[in-house]
Amino acid sequence: MLNSKDILETITMIQDEHLDVRTITMGISLLDCCHSDINIMCDKVYDKITRYAKDLVSTGEQIEKEFGIPIINKRISITPAAMILASCENRDAVKLAKTLEKAAFACGVNFLGGFSALVQKGFGPGDRELIEAIPEALAETDHICSSVNIGSTKTGINMDAVALMGKAVRRSAELTADRDCIGPAKLVVFCNAPEDNPFMAGAFHGAGEPDSVINVGVSGPGVVRAALAKAGDCDLTAVADLIKKTAFKITRMGQLVANEASRRLNVPFGIVDLSLAPTPAVGDSVAHILEEMGLECCGCHGTTAALALLNDAVKKGGVMASSHVGGLSGAFIPVTEDAGMIDAARCGALSITKLEAMTAVCSVGLDMINIPGDTPAEVISAIIADEAAIGMVNSKTTAVRVIPAIGKKVGDELSFGGLLGSGPVMPVSTYSPLKFISRGGRIPAPMQSLKN
Image 1 (cartoon, rainbow, N blue to C red):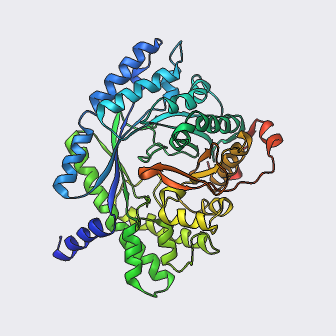
Image 2: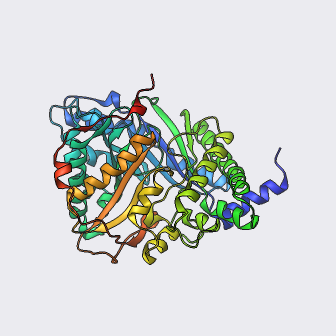
Image 3: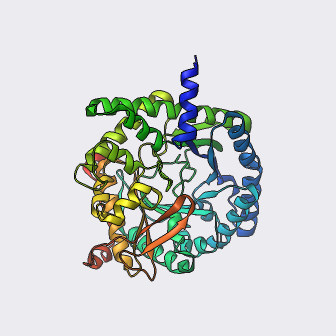
């Protein structure tokens, strides 16, 4: 039963503490669009996406208006594009990307994710063609996001794919250097990628998903920080309990929006992703939550422990609020998208090595990090391999989204605008991993994979 205190508390969360539904994402299976002729397949893809998602944006806007809950993004995720390319005789991946861009524009969504390949154990038909097309596809579209899964706990790490992705990230930056290297900001390299993630740039509609589904991602770093500020000098057990209770309230709001969108669109409800996704806005920062716990600056010793507490408490509170929690769910640490992370990186408190340690206990990985423009492809591949190893061994999702800032050096700034934010170029090790990356092959799956 709702009471006036609950209502007023929610209003305060929305108005003063940046509580919002970060995204409603409609997942759409394109498996029935496969055809040997690329032109026919593209026509079928455009037709299905625009039929299924024609009312997505307007429905989100109606819910936002009626309930007074900000819904920041309306998005689409599709079957990994490499799967449907496999059926074509002419695997023109860029043509498919342009078709997806046309469909995204027609539906009015912010982003469309799923220009993706799953190559954790090797390359199937269409996989190499898609990976090689990623830089051009991202350069020639505005709404398309791409992801590639190069490893998993069950399969190990495909180092041939890791080498290819280092080159793809660098080439994508080069092709969009005139637009602040926006290309790789829309590209994620995963280990243990989830099939139901509603957040970009890593969203895709997994093969095990229904024909269409509604997934919702909520966000409320400002709400958590405000709750901790009011709590005063309590011990860390009390901090964890407070975060759990706050995450419960945030997730219940997401569940409400998800159920309503599902009903109005006549599409099954999938999951609520209860991630704390920050923005560059002041007061909407995961780093500031960690500092509210008692750290002088995010990145100092103790940051990994504080983040582990936060991530665990968010998950525990969220799963009590919804029976269908999925996606990534926890705390994101994208540097350029988090006001506190940006400040910490600028003052030198936060380094890439510290961020790598933090990824062992957070929801994703090395996210939205600007690196020097002359960083070689093999160094980018090695960063991907390190992060994939953390995910593989710990049976968790990890990812890399780094942006080589072409023409810029350490300390320079790169700005994307909007939710992608801005931030300094951070240093990377200049010692070479070229021989290691050039060996290729697979890093075998760890003992943790043998669970049957």
